[in-house]
Image 1 (spheres, rainbow, N blue to C red):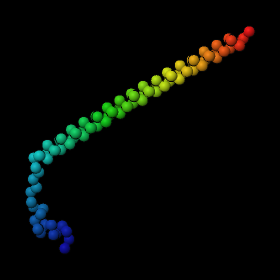
Image 2 (tube, helix red, strand yellow; image 1 turned 45 degrees about the vertical axis):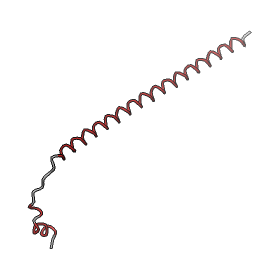
Image 3 (cartoon, helix red, strand yellow; image 1 turned 60 degrees about the vertical axis):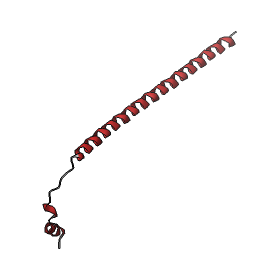
Image 4 (cartoon, rainbow, N blue to C red; image 1 turned 90 degrees about the horizontal axis):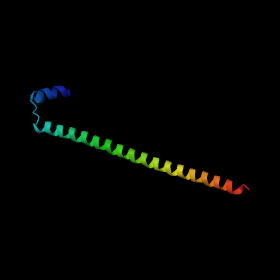
Length: 83
């Protein structure tokens, strides 16, 4: 006997299904929690990006200072070696 015939015979398809009223509350709460979690993840990523950019700028500044210092030392050494 096919499944659809068995289900029709025992009356399962005729029952009315009720949904608990708390389901809507649960669904809304999950939606709000997911939205808040996504916002927090976005904010964390933004803060992390700012930290990385700040670190990169600090490293570039240090390298510029080192390059400038090396240039000054070369200029000073060149002036001292000239008679």
